[in-house]
Length: 224
Image 1 (spheres, one colour):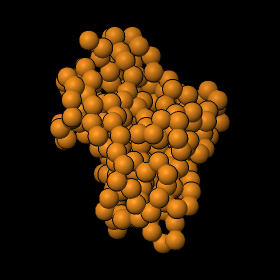
Image 2 (image 1 turned 180 degrees about the horizontal axis):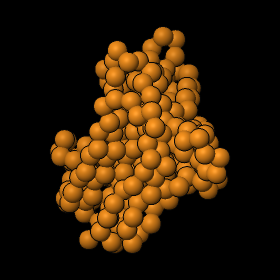
Image 3 (image 1 turned 90 degrees about the vertical axis):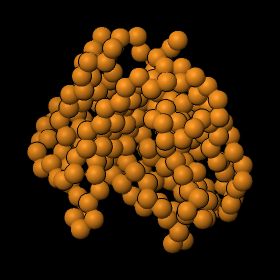
Image 4 (image 1 turned 135 degrees about the horizontal axis):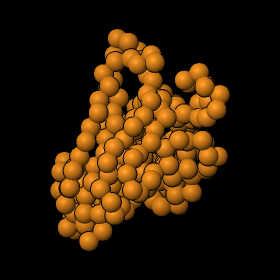
């Protein structure tokens, strides 16, 4: 039975390496690339703007509710640690939308694929991550350099590094808006939705089993 895992690194500036027999690109210095996968719930549709580190997917937003909206949340930063010999990843939370109707969009990178559901009713909007990558060796460590500033010190949000591992596959139903209408009642099936793997939502079918999870939360600023 194939085993898979993903990391989600949110709202941090970082240079990262993963130490174990199966290397994950973590130096971020290779030329960044454009998205080719699009919305994880609508494969190939709504390609995300900007560029992203090789081997990772960025949560840059491309959505449509009558009009198309694109917002870049993840960008390369070549000076976040005062170094000139490489890149780090800059991730920002933003409020995304149009004509005064916006909702929070978290900046993060992941080994899965981000998906977004946007309609005019903000309480119906949704999103997250689906899938991950297969592994054959037990992950050993996640090592990185992180720096963080707060845009609104009066309303600080936690930053998060999340790793979870599972075996098997599960299928769940998520809402989609493929035509970009004002509202949508359409749904589609996705494999290995994050909240299903983590036990926060019951899948429709499948045999996925969570093997392990690790979280690291940053509650304040990290100036160096």
